[in-house]
Amino acid sequence: RGARLAPRADAPELPSSTAVSDVAEPSTPSPAADTAPVDPDAPPPLSPAAQKAVALVDRDVRVASASSADLARPSAPNAYLPKSAGGFSLPLPPEPVRFPRTKLNLRLAVLLLRSGYETIDAMDVLPMDSFQVKFWKARQAEWEPYKFQYAPLVIEQGKLEDPLYFDFISYVQFEVVAREMPNSASVFEERSGAEGTVKVVRRDPNIADNALLPAVLAQRLGDTIYARLRYGFEDTTFPGCPEPARLDQSVSLREDAAEDAETTGQSTTDALNAKFSLIQRGVAGLTKCMVDKGYGLRSDVSVIETRVDKRRQKLKIVVEGPANLWGAQALAARGVSPMNEYLGFAITAYCRASGVGSFYVSKATDVAVEIELTVTMP
Image: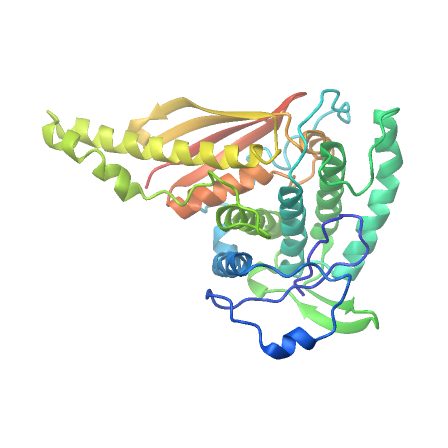
């Protein structure tokens, strides 16, 4: 297990990856490796920096996944699923996106789709051979009606940089997963390899309850996306992606003000506002690092309200022309949970890593995705 989605989402075979257990500098290849046969179809080898990034991502995701049952529970401090997930549906399928969107960076597109595929695989919710067949059939069934909406414009199948195609294939991935998860078995047979080797797969008993699976998928996917944006993905970096906030540092920025404050209450307010400001900058940086790679046309993060008495602040995040605009509306029309809330999942992962509680509400309009994020200080 641990198959990876190929750069072209319509590729029938998915190359496997090598797990990295420890974060360390990559070792120097042995001389014997130079004489090994070269597979012309194999992906290019990763640089030492990219190998180190893989190790860091694997470490963070492994640690978080071990606590998925707790992190995904309804009472957890961070809700990865939006509050509207599963409870909101549109009366009609969405209209096609009629305005031009920016070209998506290929590595970001692959990062998002591959992270989804690998998360599903690692959760052991479906036989991946069966999932690939159902994914292929769903894509074929949906493709012609989708293309017809945009005629005479031609959409090239497999071109992930095109937001029209990425929007479609992301929708199909989540539609299939959401349809299959509710009735998935915790023990099943899976075939792999050219010879169809059969093995028995058993899901982690801590997430055996199918009702937990949408939240677990959102949590693991969010942590994976944030880790890959933070450390890098296949020799691509994402400038501006924030490190987890150090709230103790924000307090130190206000130490002088606290010493000169007339009241203890004023110094507490100053310290709290410094923490809120730090989280807001992190959320804005995370959003912008995705938009800068073509996830949307532009973004804005603003403060809606601050409740010092409740140690709570509400932010509004707007991404105009996101790459998943049509798919988000189409999934909402079907009442699908989880939806392809890539940004919401990643922001929640950032908030959790920063030690602040969070939940959010997300909605898609004809031109943008809007997220209202509520953060609560410890």
